[in-house]
Amino acid sequence: MALQHKLKLACDLIHTHFGELVEKVCRCLLYKGPLVLPEIARFTEMNPTQLKNCLLVLVQHNCVQGYKLFQEAVGPNAPKVLTSYLGLADNILHRTRFPRFLAIVRDELGSEAEALLEGFLEHGRLTLEQVIQRAAARAGKSEAEVELLLKQTFAALVRSHYIERCPAPEPTVSPKVVEPPKKIPRGPASKGRAAKIAAIKNAETEYHRILSAAAALDTERFRVPSSLEEVGETGAENGDVAMADPVASGQKRKRDALAMDAKTMAVVDEKEVLWRANYEELIRKLRHQACVEQVKARIDAAAGTVLGAMLEMTRNSETVAKPEVSAPLSMAAIMQAVTMTAEGRTMTMERIRGALHQMAQETIGFISRSGEGGSNYTINMNKIIELARRNEVEAIVLQRYGRESCRIFRLLMMKGQMEQKQVAGMAMVQLKDARELLYRLLKEQYVSVQEVAKTAEHSAQKSIYLWSINWDVIQVLVLDDMYHAAANLQQRLSHELEQEQEVLELLKQIQAAKAAGVDTHVTLTQRQHEQVKRIRRVASILEASLLKLDSAILLFHDF
Image 1 (tube, helix red, strand yellow):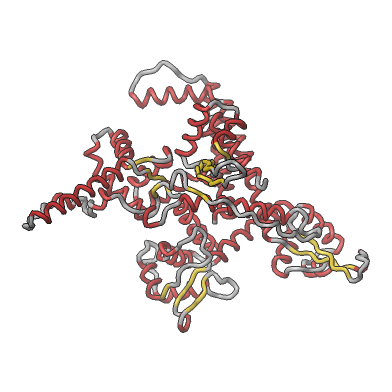
Image 2: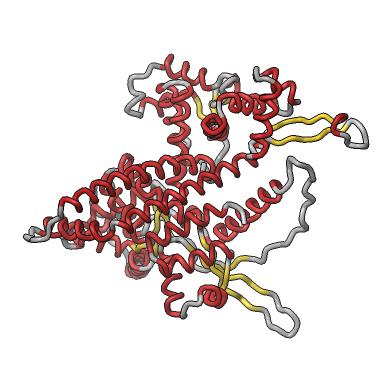
């Protein structure tokens, strides 16, 4: 199976967060694919109670999705409906991005919204009633004291699409249509690679097909609970205002019945409907931030400010997770969006026009013009992300193989297929050195070579060899290397923390006693103080490396 290191990293995260038993079930689902309960029990050799508890933990934290699959009758056997479970590797990897998600919500909606989202990230799925109880317990107040402010914050998170109603627990999925295998072209440039990419695409298609069946329509996913609709901007409830209009007795009974139905609906929304963090919207926000940072690095801060304002204005019109272009905006709408930001308040119209002109140049192409006379502007988000990916790959080639190899790589990216002599001449490299560098890059799968025979004998002396770059293969290769590095860092971090577990537990006891105001006679020795300093330094370095590596993984996989 493709991208084994991604699955290994996901299993390591589950082991760190939930323990060995839960990790065993998760590993089985990730490596073997969707399975029914008896199959999971056979592979894991766990008793039914343990297995069900582990599955409940994984479902609660959005790491597994159950679904029903209709199995047609075979011979005398009657048709069956089987419940299978699918491991969600992408959701598991999002657990490393929780600090980023909290920072996004804090910057946009404030610390109250951050605390609320933290509850969903910590517990996975919660009802509105459980959210209120958690907030009251943390604040040391009654539920009535925190309810009104919390409902306002909850409604703001729903309207911003940062939290959503949970998908169907076990949707019915139609059987997969088996297509005949496509013929894979032969040759040194495609041996084993096309099959690998095809396997990844097929797995992603089946993955998204099941998730799409479970997801509700957007109108239902982000429908604010009826009890929150009564809470206005100022915190006053509409129900506090009495209706003084005289009504007939029949109308009064109908109104009372409707009010009873609305009250029942509000109780159901508050006590039974489960909510969770919406990873899709949070990743979209990170994608916008990456686009802005790329534009700032390529052009300047003013262009980044204009692009960020345009992305925020068109955010609600994005209907897919990775749109290639944004919705078109007029100059007036762009001016309004820019002036509403803190950085753009002092920008003049001429400066905004200049930034748009820079981004719309043919050599850059971050923005395209449309409409009559080019009056509308559209952001080419896919082009910005592709440029960032290309810069990342070039940096990897430069660091691993040197300046001349990076020069050859850039040349092939620009020109496409080239002969060896052409590469040597245009890259200003000796022919012998160019040959060595090309074959070194070929060995690492960063370039590919295609034979063009002049005769039917396919003689090497009478053939032309064209060197090129298969960008799809390189992206898969680089992403797999990043998952490998991240898995190694995660394992090293877990090992270091496990080695110093005794000292860390002692430190936690001392800190807990100080926080509670209780005198404790437990102290750390000089050697233990040095151990604490060392583990903090090592953990800080490893976590910073993981954070930087995760930014690159987001760029190649989620953006």
